[in-house]
Image (cartoon, rainbow, N blue to C red; front, side, top):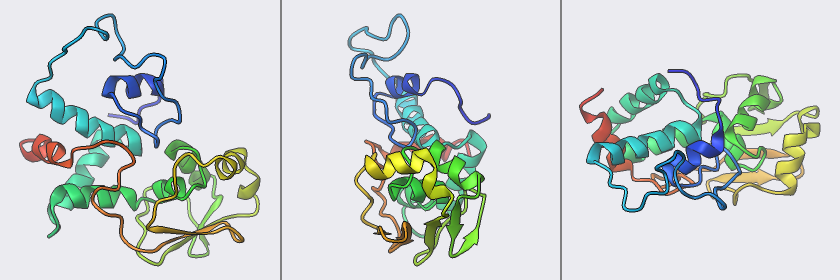
Length: 204
C-alpha cells in the first residue's frame, strides 16, 4: 500500500481528530465524517473498527505506508518497554518528524520534502532520508539555502504546534537537538496505543 496523496482534510474528518503532522487544516465547518451517511447520529464502531481507526491515525499523521508501520511495530515489540509506548517513541524520532515537531516545517510532508531536497544537515552532514531515526544528542541544522524555503519561513513565523519539550531549539543557528527520548504519550493528537497493539496482535 503506497503513501496517501489524496485529500488530507477528508482523512481528518474520517478519523475524527486533527492530525497536525498531515495537515494544518481542521474540519471546523464540516466535523462529520465524509460521505452521505457521515452525519448520521450514534454511529457505532466495532472493536475492530476502533482499533483500525487508532492505527490509521499513526499511518496518516507520520506519512507511513502499511508495510513501514508494520515494520516499526515489529521493532517496538522486541523492546523491553511497553510496545505502544516504544512504537510512539520510534515514530517521533524520525528525522522528518523532528524537523516538524521542532517548528521548522508546517507539516511532516513539508519536512520530508526539505530532507529529500538536502536542505537539512544531521550532525553537520547532508542527508536525504526522512526515516533516519535520531539518537539523543543528535543535531539538525537547516542549510543557508533551506532557510529561504517558504515553508521554513512560514513555520518559523507561525509555528504549527508548540515545540516538543524533548527538542532544544537554537534560534541563532536554526538548529534542533534531541535532548532526550520522546515519551510514550508524545503524539500531538488523541491516541490510544493499546488499540494499535491489539490490532496487530493477530496480524504481525
